[in-house]
Length: 156
Image (cartoon, rainbow, N blue to C red):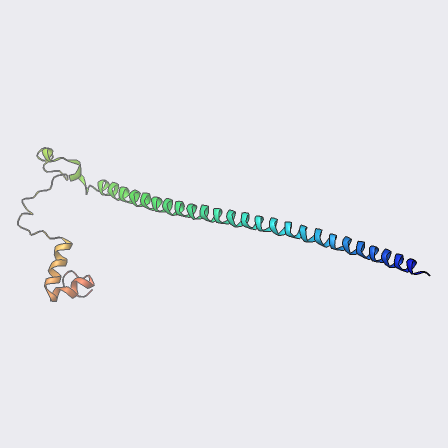
């Protein structure tokens, strides 16, 4: 064989090997390019999910706040309903008739449950729980009785 034939064979083999390497590297480059595109898409989707999660978290917090406010309003309404029921019960028992009569009508309703006889009560000193509490703070002997809920100083 001649040298030219050997050179041609070596050149052809080199070209074939070069073409194979180029094809292989081309495939790798395409795969890397696709992987890069996938990474970009993955990052974008991850960011979208994080943003959506944060938005929903804020929305949930706002809903919880509205629910707490609604619960407080419901409690307030129930308390107001209980107050109104108590007021109705007082009126049913005749314990609040004095609230039904205005000051200028007192003489007209004298002798009824709406106007109490104040002459008999004038001699008696009135006191309130506040006054009794202040007295107990000033008198150490009454302090313990007041704290334990005793009214006359005897044990129950």
